[in-house]
Image (cartoon, rainbow, N blue to C red; front, side):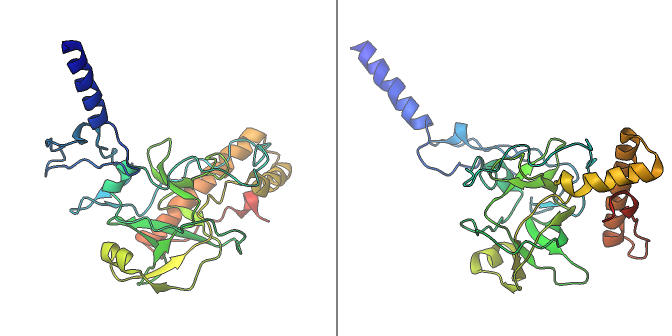
Length: 277
């Protein structure tokens, strides 16, 4: 009898600790960031916040602001092919749009509910920033619009600890691009009024929907031939080409951030000698 009672108790505990709903329960934190231990069903299994990403500022609200990020070396191999494998006709989702532990720092990640299919994908580029937990398309002047993301974009922490936009599908198919860096956004919609839920979270700003959020350097075939032509003109070795092109790209990204955030009168840096078309 005692053995049966013990078995029933273990089954009850196992049921109490398991989750049957699809949404992860976020932990409740006190003013010092410690988890508040309450009696309840899921306290031990709640999702704790992740570490604050590199380069982020935590606002008094607890949300994050990210206005710029350093560019990682974009070129690694002059013979690199992309994509490495044939793209499936119907790619499968492999990750959620945003990990639950990032929800502490982001007010809203508005996203299309389904893939858009074939869209007009122009080579337009913009910087998407995070301000007090809301994503804005950073433009000259005031009145930056909020961003409506396409279905396939995921929010992630990259290998160096920076907040980045990646893919909900194969993470190797589209290179991730950090929040605060220039991203390919493709065609985007005319500005429209923020829906009520988004306006409540981020304010009554205009919104624009973008076609993609991808790394401008993620297509080696776009840059490889030009880098090789630079090597032929200059006599540089492959390693010299990569080192010089990477240095210029990273310096240019930092100068663009300085012009955007600190001193618009700074001269831009031209790297077209490496990958001019």
